[in-house]
Length: 362
Ligand code: 2P0
Image (tube, rainbow, N blue to C red; front, side):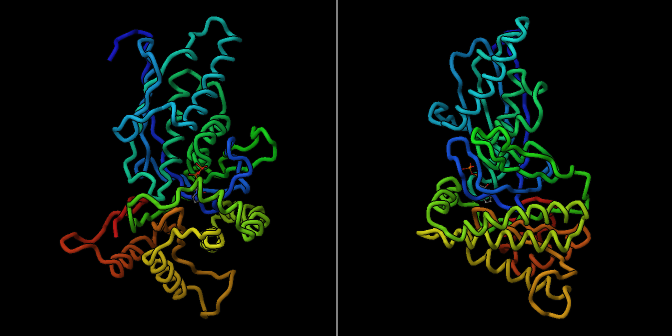
């Protein structure tokens, strides 16, 4: 390590976010502009997260990147190149406006990023990864405190769409925007992390294998081939409104119903893609059936339909088979007991006692 007094090193971390109104489809594949708005909850910093160290050092000759301990060819990572270029351009404008500023826009960077959970297994690793990377580099080159968090979210979006939502804690909307340049396609905090303290996320890892169809390719195949996606795009604005209302009112029944319906619709759209994309596996479907049966014990007279009261757990699945259950704190022990009963831990491992968004292996 160089001891140059002009060197600067920063370490930041960003948590994973799990959407309850999903992002799936781009209207612009280079600016990463979505076909619908989305809304997620950011997990706590204690749980699934990416930690990134960025060092700006005058002795560095080129930008370098290490992901989970392995060096990657940074020039081949187009999205990272875009994010870094935009951050440097931002700094350059600041330096042009104020000649006394150090020329940090010209410094080369070494970036080292690590996830504390399996990468690319449908656990939103690109979201936390690019959020931490954007935030870290923004600090290292002196722009983090000069622009708003939403502006930073716009830059994180260039790395991975869902990353923009991990720039905020709590309940976060990614407003799709309407401008072709994407300036209004940013994350906005709907409610902060203290708003609904009883809300917990239980992450159930059915498989930590890398997923077959990466999100980026999968969602564009959906845009090209699925007519059902057009119907989803028509419905999402109302769902966004209903979800924001449910969160504002801390209405768990409405929140749970909307969350499960949105997850189901996202996976229906995947199946409507041609050739079809299947992220759910038999374990995922068993979780859906278990949660449906469990909720039915409390939601009244057994009739089907919407608008029920008494939900105990809400499932949601991203681009992989792992379930995330959103549960109110008081019901977590019971749900965890159910999971242990129906998906017993492997021989020799004790009962799972960890929850609060921690990964529990089936
Ligand atoms: C979401 N997912 O809203 C949805 C639900 C997966 C299923 O955002 O191409 O990795 O980098 O913008 O952000 C996954 O998509 O895709 C995703 P890119 P990204 O969380």
